[in-house]
Image (cartoon, rainbow, N blue to C red; front, side, top):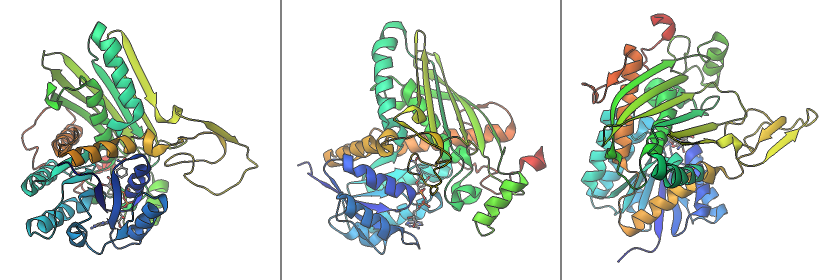
Length: 417
Ligand SMILES: NC(=O)c1ccc[n+]([C@@H]2O[C@H](COP(=O)([O-])OP(=O)(O)OC[C@H]3O[C@@H](n4cnc5c(N)ncnc54)[C@H](O)[C@@H]3O)[C@@H](O)[C@H]2O)c1
């Protein structure tokens, strides 16, 4: 018989873990009951946040194994940093295989792995454990994407033909924690960090409603990366200062700009193009997600900064800096957009509803580890293309073992010209 409520444990209670926890005010039939963190206070803070919002009687656990062993925990959401993915997953699977606990599902934040090989290993581990898997790509569940896609396919595509071009961009002024900036820890720069969203949401928009991922076949990838802002001495110094000297962007930068074209064929042999661009050097109001979908007689466009109210503060209003108007906010004066319900607008509420329902009904989520593997493969091919300065046919030889030069600490656009 189908289970009635899902008890969830979080691995990682930092920035995105807390975003998820706040989203659970809009998710039925689930309780946030546990958080495991690293060597900071974020697990206690995240558990307190869950309790204060009334989304579950969460407590901080000392270890992943202890959390899996708690009979009240039915599913794990992995929200720890990229460089801990495999060790986190291995501990969960070890706890399950040694009979310490039971789970129905595991949901994992992007990226599924820092390389194609890591992502595939995650998929192998979840299959071995025999539990359901969800890949947490929130942008597919953003209300604007869901409604825009429904309307364009129902009205425009049904009468005049399917869409052929999707554009997606994600930009902000740079990540909030030093580990994101360090190529080896994160797996790359902005391409790995944010283009995972853009390539996937654009592919999703081009895919007919209800059709499987393999209704579109990726055939070619062309990409470019650069470090436009953060290798400049003034900004490189700021990164070094903000990371206790860990980051050395003058000599060992990661890319802060990336763009990619992914060419697909549909089953009838028609070409579909995904055009994705991302940067950590956008100084606007804050995080900006943009998407477009174009077909023969129709189009849609969406910008996360266009949603909701705008507020204005004169220069006399000299309050504290904050992120109360929008994620990665850059100013508190002048005309500013407000994203009123970020957890919903960016898709976390819809995503978590979907994952919870699937896990409770014993169904594999629509977005799962197979999708995470394919995204990692596309991103690695994009790095190959950028490094070689040419279009690469997909899938290229050596994809599985490929580690980008950025992630090896060996990329420096100033040195190589
Ligand atoms: N969907 C999105 O838009 C989005 C946004 C931000 C981050 N993310 C992804 O979420 C993940 C976490 O990012 P973040 O911004 O929350 O990072 P963060 O640094 O703010 O938080 C990381 C959390 O993981 C914990 N942690 C560290 N090592 C751990 C370990 N070995 N075991 C368990 N917990 C550990 C830390 O204590 C902290 O609570 C990353 O993979 C990132 O790519 C996704």
